[in-house]
Image 1 (tube, rainbow, N blue to C red):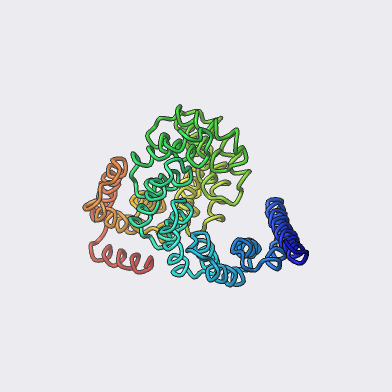
Image 2 (image 1 turned 120 degrees about the vertical axis):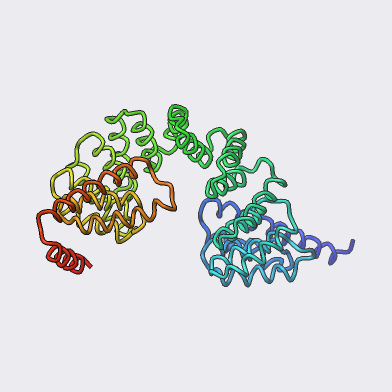
Length: 403
């Protein structure tokens, strides 16, 4: 080897060594959260060797993490051009960048291309999430299934498929998927919580509580966890412990409607309507378009003999959910207590129309029959004591006033 050739060879070694060093340092800095510093290292490596597709991909990934989505797309596009073979990571990165820019169809297109080039679960998981946004349930299920077929030990694929089954009401398959995830990762919170929820729904409260106990060691600051624990204890009639758990859930998430509503339910059950009303007012503030807090608040105020407030609360609940049987029956009861029998009868008529086509709780139907008989009896007595024309005129006037 001549002297000049030896100099060139050593320079190539030096450049290659510097490129490798900068790339490795960039990866370390990224793991430490120093994204800009890592980008500088990858840029230096690129300046040394602009034909190395890995350098361009790392630049694009750093830009994506930094939120420079347009620049990331440009970098991934450059990587695609210089790549000798189609690279799934490039198309996956492009899909991520387009999704961040809310160009979901472009993102979907690139994720599909990525799934054709790899067995990694990442593109299929991303594709399934996009399908769910469009409410394309069969397509999302197929994408999750493809991810699991290629990666049977994928915890994310198993748990997300389980949540999909839970969403569509297929409890058995959901349970199977969560069980499969826990077989590979016994402390997987994403599987423990929904599995315990399924058990809770099937009234297996002790087993559900045992699962929640494991979760409490890992995520003790979860409001949803303590809410579910509280409702399990409530179902077991351990009211003091239930209130304690629900108060903890409310403390951890004071603007959440669910713990406040559940506290209201427990306080109503234990005969503490004043305490119930306090938390139900908080629930109304948290979700002013949710009819349930208004219904429960109306029940609390009725027990506190505030019939006017109860009527206002149930009027709001009825406006938000005019076909809810539970709201209708309680609204009719309060209207009757307020002396508005005509309006109560109208509400009962609407309830009877609903019960003719929908199965409702036995207590609701029995209360509706009882109240109907009461109103009919009062109407008969009124007909006996008053002139029919005057009564008819009064009823029409009341009905017009209420409308």
